[in-house]
Length: 310
Image (cartoon, rainbow, N blue to C red; front, side, top):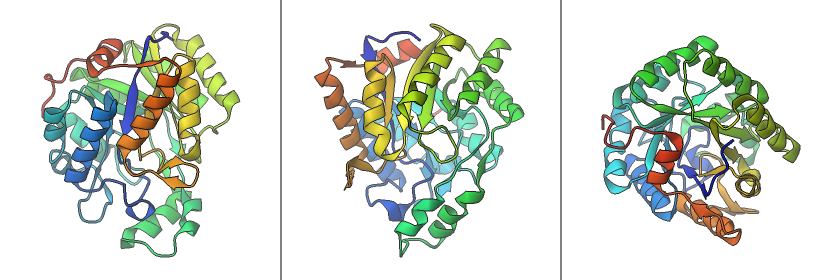
């Protein structure tokens, strides 16, 4: 792992797993997603990770037409790297998840490095009423969700998006996903520097334990040496502690309402920017500087914001 002089902050502004009932701050409409993204970038995030939602119900969508209601505006109003999901939601096909990225050819897109159970059904018991009819069934049925990315799926996404010069946020939910990435790297289907996002605390993935944080990093070091940039996201209450520890170990961090709806113990976050501002303050206390968008592009070997189709 390359030790960083500066820390890349990614902000994942909406995601696909939290539902509108869970937080009034969760951006739903294209206007809300655009504004939240710009504010997060202004607060210090150099990468904005984006999903889309149905503007009326908040249900996750892969529709490129919905994405195009906010992508050009975010590009115009910020210098941040726009990182599109190819994960979408577990209820989408690979074709649905990939449709927008194929069309707009972003600088970065996410890529889950394996199939996993991906569940949030324990959250259903917290809510007695729901804003939209789809939400309760979606949350409760997640005990039967498999997030699918087979080796064939991954190779397809890598091949198509690499032809467009798009680099990947390699999302690794367990240690086996690191070995999956090493397999594709050995075959030459992806080139360094790799941006490896190790993910902790998702029900179905590796747990949010400090020993696991250390083990995931040491495994990545063994597999990739100096050919990767390390970043971490941790779900819910683990978001800020894991981000802090990761940065102190020379890594990069991800925050945002996709990953946690909270800003402190029992305190709901009011915005994505609030989370960015908090981690930026924490890092400043340790004299850690924040990478700008252009520094981030250099660190990750990106093609530049003008070389996209939106």
